[in-house]
Amino acid sequence: MKELTVRWQRLVDGGETCPRCGETGEELHRAVAALTASFAPLGISVRLEETAISTDEFEQAPLESNRILLDGRSVEDWLGGGTGQSVCCDVCGPHDCRTVTVDGVDYEAVPADLVVRAGLLAAASLLATANASAEPEPSSFVPISSVVRRGSPPR
Picture 1 (cartoon, rainbow, N blue to C red):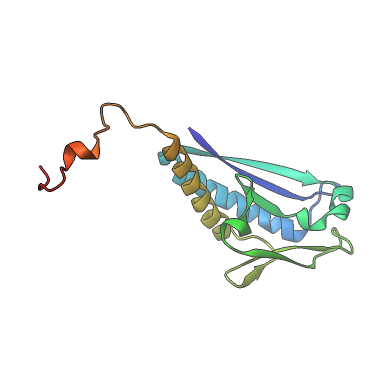
Picture 2: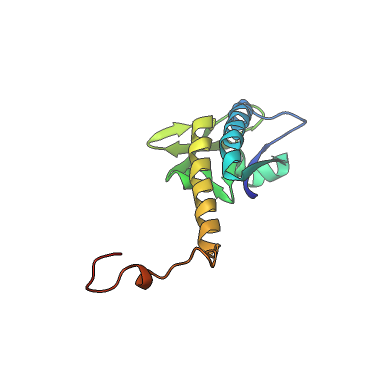
């Protein structure tokens, strides 16, 4: 079975996270449930990894918080979007937090539909890679020259 890894990293300080990350977490769990159900018939499992970023790590790189990666690529990368930043809350202190921009819309919390869209693209890539590396069965391989001869109609 192939596996799609979804990794979410966010600030956790004293067991708390900011409202933006909290909302993203709820949306992410909904998206992962939908992807898991949709991908099971295709032979793809979905694994969610949740990573806590400490206050010290957040202070060094605040825009790494609330980041979702699917097989190592960010949601916004899969969807041709970008990132920005905006003021968040007390938990985040004076630091601006990460935002995601897709189709010209800025999101502070990442909605489930963006994760699902990125997940579909990631799964298609996963399947294409798996299919490209698969060798045809010897009994099913028929050279094209044996099917169509030059200058004659197909048999």
